[in-house]
Structures are given as C-alpha cells and as structure tokens.
Amino acid sequence: MNARDSLGNLTGVALTTLVGVHALRTFLSMVVWNIGEDRSSTELGLIALGFWSLGFLAWPIGRWVGGSRPELRFALLFSALYALDHFVSHPVITPAFGVATAVVWLWLFPTSLAALGRREAGHVLLPGILLGLTGQVAMQAAMQGLDLPVLHGIRAGAISLLVAVLLCASILRLNAVPSTAEEYPNWGLAAVGPYLAIQLTLLVNLGRVQSLSGWELPASAALVLLALVTACAAAAWNAPRTARLVAAFGAVVLLVRPAWLEGSGVWLLVAVQVLLAIAVAGVLAPTPGRAGRVFGWTIAAALLLFALIFLFYSRYEWPQLWVVMAALAVIPVLVPRPLQPAPTFRAAVAAGLVGVVGLAITIAGGVQAQTVGTALKRSGPAPRELTVATYNIHEALNYWSLPDPEAVARTIETLNADVIGLQEVGRGWNVNGGPDLLAWLRWRLPQYRVVYAPMLGDLVGHVILSRYPIKESGWRHYPRRASRLSYGLTWAVIPTSVGDLLFIATHFSPYAGYEADRAGQAGDLLDFWAGRPRSVLVGDFNAVPDEPAIQRLLGAGWLDVAAPHGLDRTFTYASGQPHERIDYIFSTPDVDSLAAAVPPTLASDHLPVTARVRLH
Image (cartoon, rainbow, N blue to C red; front, side):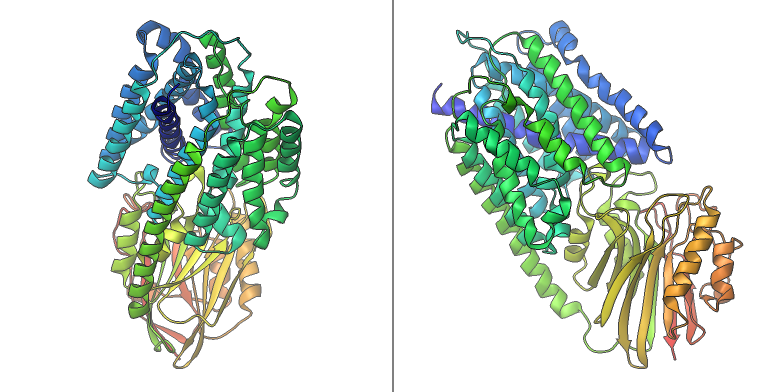
C-alpha cells in the first residue's frame, strides 16, 4: 500500500470517529432530554436501547441495498443527515435527525471496517481513532468548550457540511482489493466499545480534565492533546507481547482509584492514554476475512459502548467504571494473535498539527475574552443598590429541549444583573451533548467573575456570576434523602459599600414526590445561613409558594423579594406554558426590594427572575 492510500485510510477512520462522537452525543441528548425527558432511568435506557438497536441492522441492510460499496452509500446517507441536523433546529425534526444520524453511523462504522480489512489496512484503525479524537478535542477547544452537537444554524451547518464532504471523499478511497493474507478472528473489535467509552467519559473529556486538574480550558486542552499525540506515536511501536501485557496492566492499575487523578495526578491521564495505545496497537483492528465477523463483533462493541455510557451516567457519574472500561478495552491483548503491520508516524504528525491549530485558536480566543473582561469587570466594592437574578439554564436546552447555548447567553446579558445564580450548568456530560458550559460562559460573558460548584457528580452544578470582586466563596451538599440525588448550595461573599453581601444560590430536589426532601433541605440551608445579615438567596426550589419548604424559609425571616411587586403568584415554569412558581429570590429584612420581574424567554424550560435591591 502506497503512502497516499495509507494517509487516505487514516483520514477516513479519523473522520468516521469524529462524526461518530458527534452522532453519539446528539443521540444521547435527544433521547434523554427530548424524547424521554422526565422518565425513569430504566425507561430511558429501554427507549435509547430500542433506537440504538436499529444500528445493528448494518449487515442485512448493507447486503440488500448497499451494492458493492455499502460503506460509500452509508457515508452519503449519513453525511446528508449529519449536515441537515446542524442546519435545522425544530422540535420534531431535530430529535428525529439526531436518532437517525446515530443509527446510520452504526451502519457506516462496520462497513468501513470491513473495507479496511479487505484492503489489509486494519492497522490504521487505532491511530485513526486517536487522530479523530484529536480533531474532536481541538474543535471543541477552539469553540471555547462548546461542541458541534449543540450548535445549529448556518455556521454549524456549514462546518458539518465541510466535514461530511471530507468524510465521503475519504470513504470513496476505501476500494476493495483482493486479499491473500491469512484470516484471523476479529473479536478484538468488541474492545472498541470500552475503549471509546473511557475516552469520552475521561481521557478526552475537557470538562472532566478541568475538574480533576483545577486548570482552565487552554491548559486542560493542551494536556489532552499532548496525550493523544504521544499515544499516536506509541501506537506505531510494534511492541512485543510482553510489553503490551505490561502496558495493559499499568493502564488498568492507574485507574483503580479515581482519586489518584486529581490535582497534579491529572498527568496520569497521559500515561493511561499512552499505555492503552501500546497495549491495543495491532490487535484492535479488522483483519482480512469474512465481513460478517466484523459486523458481529462491531455490534458487540456498540452494545458495550451503550451499556457503559448509560451505567456511568445512571448514578450521575460512576468513576469506578473507568477501571472496568480499561480492563475490557485491553482484553484482546491476553489472547495470542499475530500483530498487524505497524503504522507509520503519519498519525502522530497529523494529530500534532491538528492539536496545535486548535490550541492556538483556543488561546487567541481566551486572550481576547480576558482583554474584554478586564475592561468590563467592575473593581472595588459593589454599590448598595444591585440587580440580582436566578436562572435555571436547563443545560442550555431550550423550552423544546433543543440545544441553544447562545440564546441562554443572550438572555443572561439582557438581565443586566450584577450577581446571578445559575442552576443546571454542565461541563462535559455526553448525555447533554458534551459541551463544557462553564468554560464557554466564562469566555462568552467576560464581564463576570465565575464561581462553580459541582452538585450532580463533578460535572453538573451551580454557577454564581458577579460583576464585582468576590471576597470568598464555597459550596456544600445537602444530605441525600429519598430522591438519592446530590443537591446543595453555592455561596459567595461580595464586599459592598455598606458591608459584605452573602449571596446564596441553591437547587432543591425534583418536584414530584419529594416534598419532605425539600423541607429538609430548607432546614439545611437555614443552618448554613445562621441568621447572617445582608443576605440574598436565589434558586430553583422546585416548590410552590404554599409548600412547607418555602414556608419554612419565610418563617425563619427570609422575605420574598417579588411579593411587594405583585409577582408572588407569577409562574416561572415551564417557560412556554408557565403553570408553577418554583424559582425565587429571597432576602433578609435589611435588604429592600425596589423592583422585580420575570422576563419572558424560551431559552430554557425555566423563566429567570430578577430583582433590584438596596442593602442597609
């Protein structure tokens, strides 16, 4: 195989991987938030598995309608759906395209692998996956934490169309050639599922790396890209089986305790990425032989990927599964099998170039935002009159549960608040489409200082935005009760001209069936507050005004800021058809309520609440 063909095959795998990440994240977010919202985890899992299982029909559909080049026909169909999905944002069409795109990708992937096997080019699978993940990370970093699955419109459509054209061009080059090589089992392909699961939930998850390290986006992206480039180089080493076994053991051991990865331990992610590449290089590949075996083991990979992702998020993150994912990914190393020919270093060079470009754009955008933010942020103590607000942004999903982060940002800007409490801010959940909203909001709204507190796992929580300096801040969880979900409060102390302001943002347990939880959480909040003066409390309390939780707060001395302005019965949920009041701003008696409003917007399923207050 000449160098040109090798590079073409590598590009084909890389692009198939990149769009596969997008298809998976779009599928998960549409099923969880649009099609199956408000259903139990079991119901969600069954609904998602039902749609996902349609992807297992690649073999019969490819034989019936695929002709001699099923991978090319599937690539054309996928590309059309992929581009249209990003051009259009519609309550019905977008979820339908999201599901269809994932299903067709599950048809495209095994047919492409079978074509690689026929070309005796299976050795490009691992470096191609690593190169595709490099492109994904570089693209998301360049977008300051957003990801293509949550973007729609002309710009997103143009980007997706370009990617789709490049994908089709690369798949076109995967022509079948006669093979004289000895046949080997393709069961190692099943490990692709766990391998991708650990990549998406840990190794290339920018929100996760920021959470573990405490670094901001550029530094975290640099670490991930360094790991990927190094892994691409390591994959070119035709290591002896003993070395691969040692690497497999090392990768699994490093993940036994997730706490090892925190702080400076985040550098262990580089070691895990490289060790996995050494372990599976040459065995994680399709070989010449019967195409049906490739399809069968790819179905196993898809099932493992689905099961591991859903298990991981069923507990709002399950870090202990990382060691299971790694162990399943390296199982092929345990069985003796001739290695595929070692790939060249083209993947490492290409990954390095892609990573440098993406990182350069990230840093340039960050510098520009920092420059703007320096001019817009207020210095010195805050004035005694302030505008405060609360807003549940619903993971940047709008009233129809379609992603629209820009609408959320514009809504926050129109509130023109000095201090804002945000709920449901995600930073890398694949089931939410994968965006790091914390990093993006920090870039998109440079006029604010940002405090983040993890609540549902490490990657979903509260944010406090403040135009004025923050003296100190922190957060705490409420004890887990019947809902078994981890909720809590975030706080910040903001110096003002008349003394410190204590600003508290919170989120109580879900509405249906958990009234006792919320009453208990109100007590926990009161214990934290401990009667401190000049305090403002905001949040999504998931409680109507007559509920014990709200009455307990009022009985302890908190004042409903909206009530003096006739808004004590104004509904805040759901934004398109408001029928409940569950979002509030409270204050202590030494804070006067000058004005209040519930601005209309469909950017989230909640309406924001704002108030103008004067401190004494």
